[in-house]
Image (tube, rainbow over all chains, first blue to last red):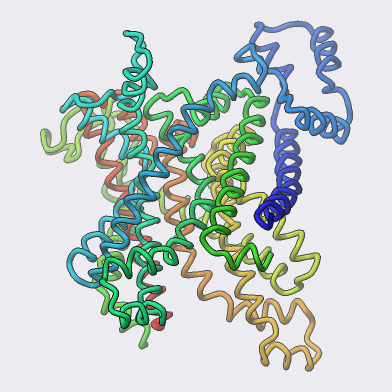
Length: 325
Length: 276
């Protein structure tokens, strides 16, 4: 019950944030030269002023800005994101089509970064200031400084062009139609390089945080007590240290959700994955502001959702949190 | 002086400083070594590195000298990184100082706005800004700075929260100092050092953000930027992979240098944290 009320409170608290973002982005787009109708007219290859006026009236673009904003927010509440003139479909449909590859990529990268960050972090902390620690920490620093798009390109050169182990891009093989398990394997093969590319920088961050928080927890009194009781080292680490050292790692997932979504714009462009990030890039290039605004809305929702899940996870890992409320 | 000694005792910090000085030297010597426009055609396209002594790092798809572009690119990266960081720190310090000093509803509103910015993915917001304001060197720099202020704001706020009721501030208040005087003259100088150290993180991220934007061809195409060159090299990746590989190493070295110097400064200025 406590968890439920915590969940409700957290969700309610994120509504003002969401509204603030939408108002901000809407006002920003008012500053942009040209509007949807200009874009449509350009698409149609020009048209006369009367048609433009009619279209503006139809889309409500002749109203005052506060009224347009109110209209827009009211439409969003009903999950109507408007119409994309470039794709010839409602924006919500376009975004929904593009969402699965991005979610898959993000989940895979996050799991990869979290798992190996944890592993390397624990390993480095156990051998603090010896050579394995130095090596792991140095690698972490280098990974952190590597531009992800460049790493992706170099991975394509090595693994796709020279070794020919993995496909250089795309979401699945278009040539042969796979079904069931073989389709899943095909998609997984296509996702290996993008996952490594997107996950690398987060691996570096998780590894550092895990190492630091392990070192901190290892010095606490209850660990000394556990050791004094004669528990073996593996038991101390897995049962006592890890659970507490994990808390900062979990917080970080929520903080990094937005960064990861931003990173997927670049990674999806490198590997031409038909995801949300690639869509964001395309709508900037084609000046499809309606779609861009929809993507902003959906990514804010995604970040809020991830943070929400993290909060619930946190409450489970550390019971003090839900009790304090 | 102790801090300087501590800084030079850490090999990582020294390596970082040397690398950073190297990049700065490249930026400074660009016009002197390559007086011609780095984007002008210089020779045959796609000459491999070391193949022709005139082009030690080879030429790109259209026959422009890669070495010249790397040297000029150092300028662009340091310029965008530096100015964007200054903008981000300025906004962040302002927002954080007011939020932390006044607390209450001011804090509430400012932190809501900060939260909204943090909820939105940096890079997506950057795309929106570029879509709206275009991608000249100036707009890109301001945009990168504008998406990077929330973290420094939170840091400044935390510093102000812990400092605002210390004795020296209360003494100032009793002396009849105005709020603005207290914020700028008394608290800010004490709150600033950790924020300045954090600037290295902001700068590293700013350089990476701009290079990603340039790679996607959404940054200024009229300057020699490392990201632009990587994007260009992508078209010939299959065989002439060096066109993309070389500028990537330059970005990697620069970001690494900035991070190492920042970490070194942090360890030198807060020795207590280091010993843990």
